[in-house]
Length: 264
Ligand SMILES: NC(=O)c1ccc[n+]([C@@H]2O[C@H](COP(=O)([O-])OP(=O)(O)OC[C@H]3O[C@@H](n4cnc5c(N)ncnc54)[C@H](O)[C@@H]3O)[C@@H](O)[C@H]2O)c1
Ligand SMILES: O=C(O)C1=N[C@H](C(=O)O)CCC1
Figure 1 (cartoon, helix red, strand yellow):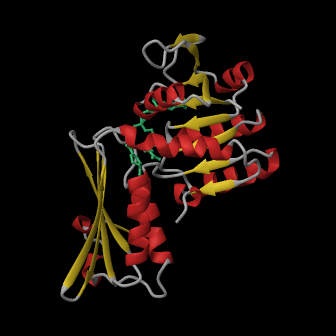
Figure 2 (figure 1 turned 45 degrees about the vertical axis):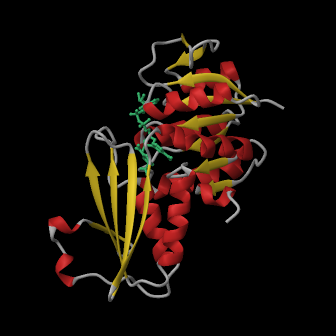
């Protein structure tokens, strides 16, 4: 059975990559694309030799016209609350990669899955290597009392710190039976980053980067570094396609984190 997919944030860096990947997948059909920058009712060719699909700035209209099974969202955190309401009312399942979402938005998506019997996957990072890096950090956190994260991204990134860094810190802290240690002198010191569940996170933004993260764990006499680097947005596509295929058949389920769909 072919899964029909629409993309929100279609004209962005990730949206374009998702449209290429969906178009190239034999079991998926790109039904339509939405972006705030789109001209009304335009058509858009997602890849060379690919048939044009409807492109609209009105998500409700696009979903009503194209009736996809799954909406993939890589847009802006501020846009997601409205997007998920529209998708849920249209009975369309969600794969969301947009980061910077509030706890209220996550809770609302959880409610919508049960209210409208749709599925939803939200993952701060769809790169399989990043998910492994987070899992290794979770394991290592049990054996080291000190931990800091340095995340490095391209200069156009809207949010800081990254969704991956926040999720990594929270996962690491949850795997321990006592808090991480840090210096008392960190408090209020602008050069010492921002703490999430006791893990200090530092953000770097500059051209030349896509997305990178290093987790450094410390103990007397040793450190352990766990590092993931991306060189192109292609790395996110296997995870996005996996999430689309899984969630199309799991109505009513809310899944946070790609690791829940992998065999860890
Ligand atoms: N989960 C992951 O693996 C992963 C990977 C890369 C990026 N991201 C996240 O995905 C998001 C997008 O990243 P990007 O680099 O493609 O950004 P981008 O700025 O290149 O693209 C975002 C697109 O969303 C559109 N947009 C903004 N507001 C909108 C609205 N209200 N309705 C419709 N479209 C709207 C913009 O016009 C733009 O085309 C960011 O939050 C980023 O952090 C997540
Ligand atoms: O390019 C981005 O923006 C990315 N954002 C995600 C995050 O905030 O963790 C994942 C990596 C790429």
